[in-house]
Image 1 (cartoon, helix red, strand yellow):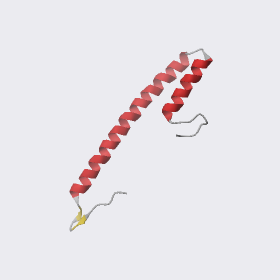
Image 2: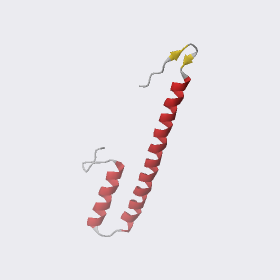
Image 3: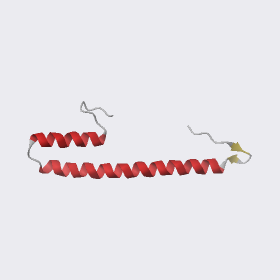
Image 4: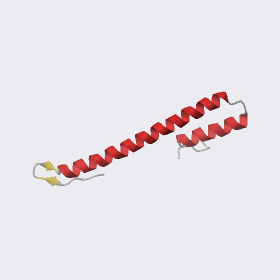
Length: 77
């Protein structure tokens, strides 16, 4: 947990602002990664609907699970 230096009138605003900037950058990165993964998953789900070969379907499903962070046994990575 982040701890800030306490000054006479409260927390050191420079420290707080630097920390907030770090959090914002991390959230933006995570949001972008999430959007990219969602796009890939949607594309694979559409491909799965059109695929007739069961072996190819299984490979697509495996890739979707991998992108979602799910192991073959159904648990999260």
